[in-house]
Length: 285
Length: 285
DNA sequence: TATTCCGATAGTGAC
DNA sequence: GTCACTATCGGAATGAG
Image (cartoon, rainbow over all chains, first blue to last red; front, side, top):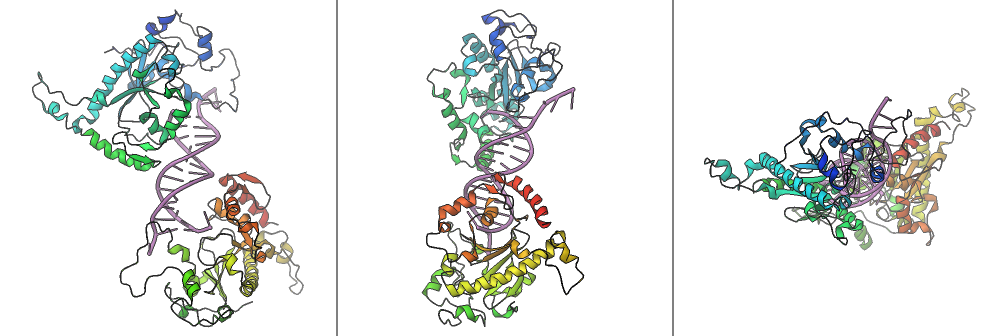
């Protein structure tokens, strides 16, 4: 378990201030030393950095009308730069990551693990995880975060569980029965084609029971091979999950219940009703 | 001008009572004599007649789940069988027709002229109008109905008309200026593929200004060649307007303003806003 | 594949 | 091409002195 460290004073909520927080060392120093600076450290970082206002330019830099990019794509960086401003939404800060509750949870428990390394956090998953040390650290922290998610899941639905009853009713605290393994209900992985700029690892319970699941891509992005387990990285060069057509097919394919496998065609509303029922049964396992 | 004749007592509002109203003579007797009866008069009529309950069967005849037909398709026959039950919605009854206000008017004035002839009223337009005598009578009655529609249109929008001002302001009743010709704003015609079983001639003002115009087919069915002027019947055998593909294309094609010709693509809402403006200008012509 | 709003499109049921 | 209802699908904006 990592000790949480809040860094309210270490970063301003400004895009043009990209200094790594003091002590953010580990990941930043694995490949090359990088002095704290308000500018990107090298050409590559420059290339990957988000657009920012010229610090000395008085007139606002206008976005072209055809540039559909918006603030939203880079929004996750705020959690990294100023985690303390998000209150209880931020669960943990380590030298390497920030762990947050997803603002639009697609399941009963849905966390995001955000790497703090500027060298990596604007890379696509396939690119970022080509760095074995980076990947190893994230897998380790993600595993830890999953334990936290499992504990939260138990808190939320544990009282409904049949297999958890022995433990709940145990009085011999020195010799508790095991109870349900909630960690098995937690998935750790990436979206094949994220929309948000910053690398984020999903730590999510399997149930897909959430009012925020509102359309096909919400559901399919977590229940098809579009969701790539973190343990599967690095992907082989010829892994089918790298294929854009394959993944677009996953996103638009017919609905299939994650639990019973029933096919719902394109009947999203019927799927949603079914997920209610499955949730009740799943809670009671 | 025809004298109106109300026949409240002549027909019950039942599908299994298809007696021709007393005195409905003209059309019914043009081709062959047909005795009043509660059953279809011959094999052809039997074929074309709507499904009806067996009069002596106690148990209701259930429709199959795949039979998408409903009462609605035959609803217009009620105006023929029992016009008096519709109050002021029925404007005129002649031996040959019933003239009604459309319940869902797609323009400022929208009437339906319903032939009363059982021999014809379940035929498709192309089939029914293969009978020249039938066609001639309907064209004559439709022309009369259009005059009534024009008068109603003038009543509704005449005060806004610039070209009508001289007549409105005239005091010399013996020598009135002509004013606007509202008859030119009235269209008389058929839908190429009606959904209602019973033959109905649309008598409609050109404006398409109505809250009941709610989707593409509403608009295109009156503003493309899907709308076939009654004067064009009988259609030549090779008339393109008989082609189903052609007409489906008309129904689904991009919007085009009936007045200025502007193309609105598939932007129905924008078209609707534009029709508001055109209506204001059109009223003032 | 961020959300949200609006709108266009599609399927159904109607006694 | 009946209506009315629901729902699916599709595009566009999204910030901010």
